[in-house]
Length: 253
Image (cartoon, rainbow, N blue to C red; front, side, top):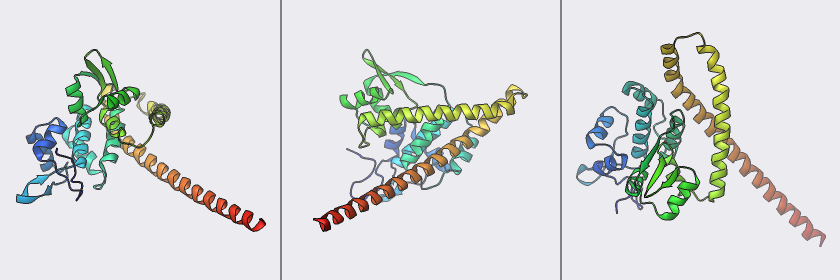
C-alpha cells in the first residue's frame, strides 16, 4: 500500500497521479498550481520521478477552500505567498479550518465509498462513530450527511492520542471563543461599512478575510505555545518541590 511518507526515510512517496486522486483534482490542475508556485517542488526519486507528501496534499486542500470562498487565483497566490514555507501539514490544516469558518455550512450527502475518498484513507466503523460524535458525519440511511468543510481536520484528529471526551470538549471551547471573537470583530467592522455601498462592503470583506485569518492563527499559535511552556515550567517546579519534600521527610525520619 502506498503511504504519504516512507517510514524509513520520511520522504514523500505519492506520485503526482496519486496526489491528484487524493485531492480530487486532475493531474493537469496539480501541475498548473506547481507552475504558479502554489506547491513546493516534489522530492525527486529514482529516474527523477517526483514524489509528493502530506504538505502538498494539505496545500491543495487549502487552495480548494480559498476557491470555494470566491477568491481569484491572483488573490490565492498572494495569500499563499504570505504563509511560511516550512508550515507543516497540520498547520496548513488549521489554516484551512479557519478559512472554512468564513463560508456558509457545506453539508453534502456521500456514500461510504465517497466518504473514504474524501477522507483520504479507509474509515472503519469506529472511525465513522468518532466523526459522528464530533458532529462532522451523520448517518443518513445507506449514505452520510457530511460537513465537508471540517472533514479533513476531523480525520486528522482520529490519530491524535486524546480521548473522545477531551476532543469534544476542546471543540466546544474553540467554537465558543471563535464565536465571541467573530462577534467582537463584526461590531468593530460594522461602523466602518455602515455608510458604504454593497460593492465596497464585499471588497472590504474579501480584503480583510485573509488578514483576519492570519491574525487569528498567529495569536492562537503564540498563545498556545506560551501556555504549553508555562505548563511545563509549572510541572517542573512541582516535581522539584515534591523531591525536596521527600528529602526533608527522609532527614526527619
